[in-house]
View 1: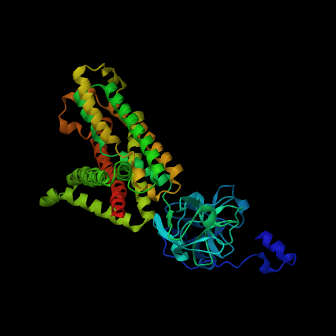
View 2: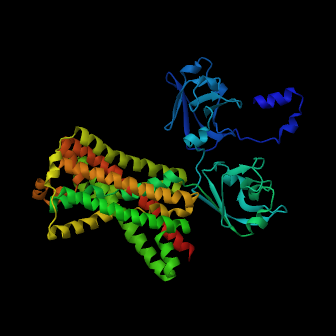
Length: 536
């Protein structure tokens, strides 16, 4: 405000400072809740918009806060952040700090000192889809491409590079107001005077210079790196790592052979990842395998691959992993709570409920869809990382188990080869982000990064988990166990390191963690059906 005040003091008319900009002060239906409280008293509100400085403004006004509340003892927070005390000036906190204050609008704001709170913390203000589609309906006299996407459809689209707009083979990042300053010859998306989104080339004609024309498709995308990355990780980390190693140790008792096939499986998956990353960059559209086969071998081959992938690669694994998740959860539950004759139906009912809940969540929109994916994946990864770290540091085990390693004979090589098939299954999902390529912003840059980073992360995690299995389990004793005993190898290892009670807790957490895989299958699979439906 200081520059504005200086201009007014010098006698410059207020009208010359720029066009009057309306700013919504009414509360929208938002998912990001905000809570201000002190000594048991609470004020509930939510974010309503981000101002031009990136401060996240709430619908809590200064007059809503009781006078007797001491500013430095007020706690402001939500599930995503916590701030203690209201400040009066930004100088009271270090640069980069998240602060709360009453802004010039008279409303409670969350800000970052010398930064942008909306960008840094990803605050969102309403439920918007991950992809918004429209088309160019007319060309203005200045050559701007006017779309059929009205302002109210874009009210909650972030005005920064978290959003990409594609049209006519050209991409720009961010949706900006009409008076936003940009250098000459910059391709931008603006909220134009027409009341709709307009694609403009500053100082020139977008239609002439970029070839934009009526009926060109316009696509706004919001999936970013982390959503795509967690989708890859969630798709890969599933039942395989929790079962496959038990078979190999049971059949070979060879720790070195176990580590070798998991390393080889990771390298093969990485090769596939690099390939799919290149293809997805060339064709950044929903569909992945179906799309690539259709372009290479024709529509008929694409349909066969598309349906096979949809049914066998997503629908079937969704049912299997949901049932496995229900199994991990129902066993400890049935030990504590007797459900009588209904026990036979507990597992399928739980599995069905999981699928229904996740389906509804994914239908709600981008925020809920990506949010539940990230959260469920973090649960699963945290569990496996915790098993590795806590197990290796504090669990009962023996590094001497590695002494059982040996050069495999011909029969064992065949057995390890069979084990590699199981391992390859455990690594499936490395191409998951390619299925939502049509919804990823800046796909040429973000898709390869998310695919490769996800695959490398999972490969490293798998090797550490198998290291923990070997530390916890005596390979020679594993050969004496029955197959049903060695299948849940993660739970078995937890019991060996910490006892039966901890093993049951791990079983429950594994069941919850597997829901991340179910969620990933349900998020990726429908994109194949969507791509085939688009082709008629």
